[in-house]
Length: 475
Image 1 (spheres, rainbow, N blue to C red):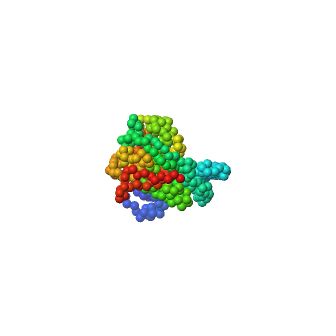
Image 2 (image 1 turned 45 degrees about the vertical axis):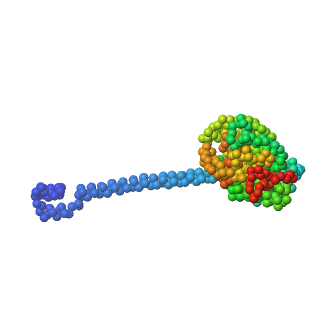
């Protein structure tokens, strides 16, 4: 029994498989500490998890610290970049401001020099310097947009120097209120129309000898944007192919015939009120004969510099050149200059003048004339002071784009001179063209004259005839 009890103590149950333990064995078994493999295994697993958890937490803490460091470093880098960019922006603004301030100082310096010159000169020489000052003032106003009052006071001050500018026979002058430089044109004769061997339209023939029996004045340049804005302050011309047409001293375009005449009426009102208009004269658009007479300036050639255009013509006129033709995908034409320096209209007076001292009579922009367009006018008009005062329904050319044209049946007003988008043939001294009076076009502007009023002579009961002439009264 003793051995049997020993077996019970050492074994799991102390009995052979299949035997039933007695009560004593059960009690001994029950009194022993329970060391089950299952319990111990469970405990081991718990310990393993406890071992793993601290290891994971330690790595997580390291990752968190690293992430915080990265965030702090990134934030510092971003802040540094922002500071550097702010400093660069600040210094760039300081640099730009210095450049602008230097330019403003240069403007003021030039105004100061011209002011001394103005005080020492008289009459037209003084007026020329005043025009230069006004141009500098406009530049200063564009650079210093925050001080419009300053530049406005400058402008008012120097415009007063023009108050004694009057149209006196044989002398040039400046229109005070609008600062238009007017050139004296003496009366005379010229050949109007094209030569028989000159390429051109039928409406330019027959060539006629025409007399202008009165002296008159014509603007040295085309009417500019800054001049037009005195009467139409909101006038703005949008860019064309990213090229500006709205600079102060570019010719005013997108102006129909009626607006051009309205400007003349405004000038008449102010100048007549000031007593600065000769008797029976008025500011208006030039007649077609006045325009061609002034354009030719005593020449009898195709252009007022010679019979060919080419690179010589590019010194006198801004037209379509080979460079802009390639850029804008336009047609290249014979006798076209290689490059004239501008894609669209140039600042007035940028090219050489004709013998009368007039700029841009060829090219830059077409110019409205007073006359109605008549394709057969040269067969009908008189030889002295001709003007077409009667509207004629005929084919009028319209443009969808400079290389896409069509015609309509309508009445039209004469336009002369050609533009920056035209080929050499269309910028000849004899070239005639027309447009409906309501047309606003990027290539059409105007210049003014001071000349005799156009009086319509009539027969019978007020019937207009084709031989109407301006009434002549030489001041």
